[in-house]
Image (cartoon, rainbow, N blue to C red; front, side, top):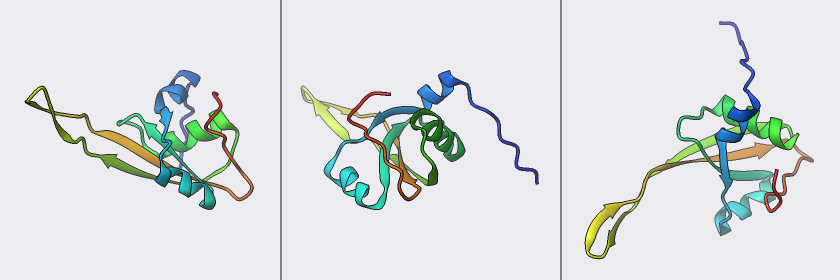
Amino acid sequence: MSAKKKALSKERLYRVLLAPVITEKATMGSQFNQVTFKVDPAATKPEIKAAVEGLFNVKVRAVNTVVVKGKTKRFRGVPGRRPDWKKAIVRLADGQTIDVTTGI
């Protein structure tokens, strides 16, 4: 099997990463060189890796993804459902950092 890398367009890089996840649990990952992002549900691990490396100029060691299931909630007594979304936990190489509080 040949390992062909397809270059992503700049537009696709921005569409893969939707937002950083700023929670207590996500910020605890910074001790282990991890950054958490909300990503496009159709994005693959190689696309997420390419997007982080291309936009933040860092070296990525690993990408783990989780599909977070939406909660069932009630709005004015009517049951509804929040949408599912995809979360990516990106592990950076040693010595690399990303400041998610600033824009790209």
